[in-house]
Every structure is written in structure tokens, then in C-alpha cells.
Image 1: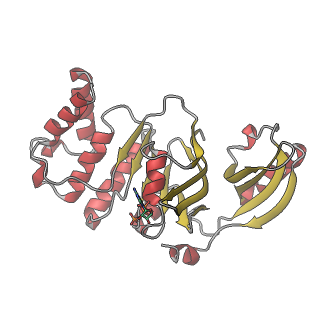
Image 2: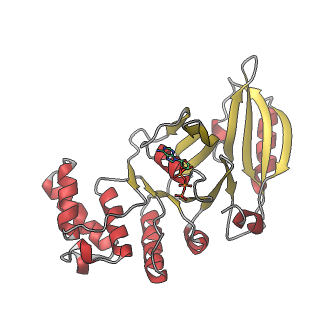
Image 3: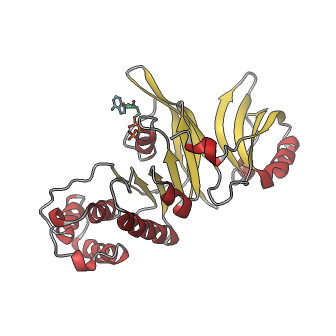
Length: 292
Ligand SMILES: Nc1ncnc2c1ncn2[C@@H]1O[C@H](COP(=O)(O)OP(=O)(O)OP(=O)(O)O)[C@@H](O)[C@H]1O
């Protein structure tokens, strides 16, 4: 599993009101991640920070691919576009300076992937909400994209359009894309999403799997020399929080899947870490749903 981005200790407030506090999570290649939480919990804010459209007050976004290309689709879908999708995408690509030939090739390929060839000559103003949403995602993907960020992509779509878009997102993932999205539709989460993060009280916690509610994870709190490399452990741990203590010592809070816990604990001991706490983290599905 290749890690493409790490969100480290992000904090954000608006006019003195805290929205995110010490939020950390990793994004992997070819995975779909969902951010869920109540209205106003900070989902869009975190998406914008991940997408580089908003700056955190503290913390960093560490891109593991130096050339990581991000496509961002906002929550609001413009509805009164008088162009056909082909015309609209062509204009948008041209404005961004894309050369004509590769632009046309990319539009043809996107119309095929999104199953929109038959609608290529229909004006967007006559489209359903689901089709308009697809055009917005295509626009975000005009240039090569590694990570697609979608704010509430399914909101307001009927069941058929949701399922259609869900199939499209799954095929984008199969073609190598990573996706981070916010949503409320639990059906989408169950069928499509690899990892779910809940935002609650300005903090983010991971729910490991919808498919296997018995899938447990543990939280480990440990102290370790800041000189010690954790690189080899990164595929097995999710860093939730990191802070610098005295004398070059860092304190980390990480989550680890049950099956990797012994391996990670042993590796930490070999690195002279002091394990301060080990506890199960997973919320039950009932607890989880009560958060949003
Ligand atoms: N630009 C801004 N200026 C001031 N406050 C903001 C700004 N953007 C967001 N907020 C506030 O930050 C909080 C989090 O907003 P955000 O849009 O990230 O939440 P959300 O979880 O995406 O909400 P929803 O589910 O309703 O879309 C809210 O209280 C919101 O009013």
C-alpha cells in the first residue's frame, strides 16, 4: 500500500472558533476514504485543507508523491450551464492552458468512463443532478489526477443516480485513483469506501471497516526518540497525534489494526520506545452512527 499523503496535526479555527484540532490521517494510493460527521463538524474544511484550497493554522500536509495531482469538486453544482458537456469541458481545459489534441482525447476518454457519450451534445442545463455532478467530476479530472476530492458527491441524487455514480467512482479507483469524499449516505460507505474517518468534537477517529464490524483496532500511546525512524512501521500505523516532549523525545498516538498490534509493539520495543498505553479504539456501528 503506497502512502500518497499524510495529514499531520492539523488545527484550524475560524474567528476564534475551533473547527479541527490536531487532526492526522494518511491517504493511500487506490483507496477511497470517507469523512463523515454532523453538519458543521468540519468535513469541508478538512477537504479544502487536503486539497490545498485552505491553509491550516498549524500542522502540515505532507505529499509523498512530489508531483501529486489533485482534483477538487466542491459541494455546490452549478446548474445553469448552457454548454454541452463537451463544449464546457473544452472551454475549461483551454482556460487552464491544455493543448487542443490531448484535451480532446481526455474529454473523449472521460465521456466514456462516465458513460456520458449519448449526452455529449445535450446542454448541461437539461441534465439531471447526477449528470451535472458527473460533469463537475470530469472537469476536476481534465488534467491527470492522482487524488480526487469530492464534497458530498451524492447529496441530492436519487437512488439510481447514486448507484450509477458509485459504480463510476469504483471504476476510477480500479484505474488507480485515490478518492477522499464526504457523505451522509451510509449505503455508499458500505459498498464503496475503504476507510471511514469520523469528525467529532474537532477530532478525527477512524472506523476501520463497515464490512467487518468485529475488525478491531488498538490505540497505542508511546514515547520515542525523535531521531528514531518509524518509516518501516508506517504501513501498519495511523498517526493520530504527535508532539514534541523534552530532550528530543516525541509522544505519538497511533492506531493499529488488531492483527498488526503485536508486530508494531515488538518493533517499538526494538526501537527503545516507551509504550504508555494500549487500548481498543473501534466504535461499534451503533456508536458510530450516533456521531452523524
Ligand atoms: N470561511 C469560513 N469562515 C468562517 N467560518 C467558517 C468558514 N468555513 C466554515 N466555517 C465554519 O466552520 C465550521 C465547519 O464548517 P464545514 O463547512 O467545514 O463543516 P461541514 O462538516 O462540511 O458541514 P456540512 O455538513 O454542513 O457541509 C462551521 O461552523 C462553519 O460555519
